[in-house]
Image 1 (cartoon, rainbow, N blue to C red):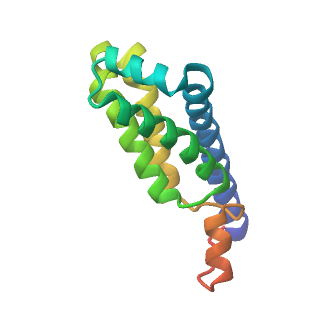
Image 2: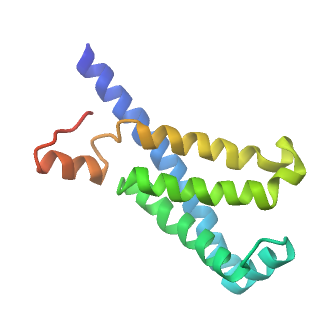
Length: 141
C-alpha cells in the first residue's frame, strides 16, 4: 500500500511539474516568438518595470528555459525559486494594481504550484530523480 501511495504521489508531482512547465514555456515562447524581446522591453518600459531591457530578458528566459527544466525535471528547487522571483516581480510591479481578480491571481497560483513542486517528490521521470538514483541516493517515487 505504501508503495502505491508513494508512486501516486510521484505521479501527481510529475503531472503538476509538467503542467506548470507547459504554462511557463508558453509564456516564455510568446515573449520571444509573438512579441520579440524588443516588444517585451517596450511593454515593460510602458508598464514602468525597472530596467526593462534586463527584466525582459530575465522574464523571457526564466519562463522559457525554466519551463523546459520543470518539464524534464532538472534543478527543480532552483528553477522554482527563479520562477517565483519572476512571478513576484510581476505581482509587485504590475499585477497588484489590479487587485486579486484580474490582477495577481495567476502569478499567485503559479507561485503556490512552484512551491509545491519544489518541495515534493519530483517523480521517477524527473532527470533529478534519475541522477540521484544513479549516484546511490535513491528515488522517492
